[in-house]
Every structure is written in structure tokens, then in C-alpha cells.
Length: 237
Ligand SMILES: *Cc1c(COP(=O)(O)O)cnc(C)c1O
Image 1 (cartoon, protein in one colour):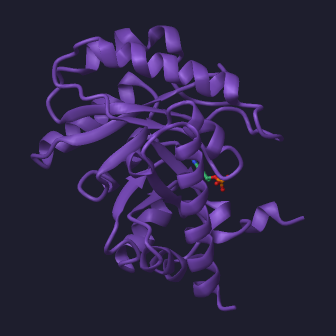
Image 2 (cartoon, rainbow, N blue to C red):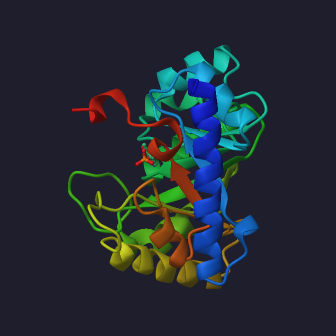
């Protein structure tokens, strides 16, 4: 099987898993957005995924994104940024990505707003929540989230569209249900508050190893890499 065929088969398998998980949870599979996490996979792989039906690509590193962008890797799909983002790199993203999923501080949001204003656009963002309060990870702690949304909601150039979370690496099915469920609760709480200019549409959580569990807890955006492209070089031991 060629790499292209393999990616095609994998995309269909992931879609089927999403459908089954949605049905099991009594949800409409169409409500769940599949983001292909494309890090460390080259333009040819990304193109193959889009040809196989991927509608959103999610990239982690700015430099890698810019390179593949110039190679037209993402043509035919939406592009999201899902990795940790330094303020000095924001200028390379605004205008290229439809959603920045990994906004983990007010300061970063402010810089994004500045560049969006400069470009006369409104940048959609998700706020990244550090749901397990892991010291090694970025992300906003749940208890300060409402205040941060309050502070950001009226800034020109920004539109908050929801929440994103990367819980601890899970080793077995069900391990992250506790964190996913806390995210669901947070998502509901935030949705019920009526902030100006905020439209809480997306709950982005779930990766190759645990997206079924995430879907059972209300995720409507899953970010899947390994199950589509295979293991990344550093994962092969
Ligand atoms: C790599 C990555 C994913 C996908 O992880 P897999 O386990 O390969 O599916 C999802 N989200 C983020 C932020 C990532 O960096």
C-alpha cells in the first residue's frame, strides 16, 4: 500500500470511530469536527489527508506551518494552529489560520488582537484550559477562566469561539474521562453566561488515544495525528 492509500484508509477508519462514538453518546456525528494534527508530516502527507476527506488541518509549530503553507499543503482545507505559541511568532499566523486553538494567556490574546486589527480582520480563538493543572503545561486554570473571558470579550480583533484542552497523556481507555467531564462542565458554565461578542461553539478535546472518551463527554472537535498519519519519528522506539 502506498503512503497515500494508507492515509486514505486511516482517515476512513477514524471517521468511522467518530461516528460510532457519536452514536453511542446519542449525538449527531456531523456535529463533530475532525482536525488532522499534521505535525512532522510533510506537505505530501497533508495533501493526501485532504484528498481523503480531511477538512481541517491543525499545525503545531509556526515555522513548519509557514513552510508547508508556502508549499500549498493546506489548499482545500481550513487551517488551525494548535501548538504552544510565543507572542513574537503571532505575526506569521494571523491571516493564515482560521482558528488559533491554543491561546493560553491574556497577554498572547492581546498580541493576536493587535495583529488582527492591523490586518483588519477578526481572529477566532479558543482558550486553552489546563484542566489537570499540570505544572509542565501552559493553559488557563479553570477558576480564572470566567474573568479572563470577561477581560477579553470586548477587545477588537478577537473572537472567542470556545475551549481547548490537552489532558495528561492517557495510557488506557477511560483514564481521562474525569478531566474530559470537568471540561464539559466548564464548557456548559461558560456557554450559559452571556458574554458580548463571544460565541462558545467549540469544545476541542480528544486525540488518537482517547477521542471516543472525549466525544462521550461532549467534545465537538477532535485533533487526531497518529491514527491518521502513523507514529511520528520520535515515537518509534
Ligand atoms: C500532536 C497533537 C495532537 C494529536 O495527537 P495524536 O496522539 O498523534 O493523535 C492533538 N493535539 C495537539 C495539540 C497535538 O500537539
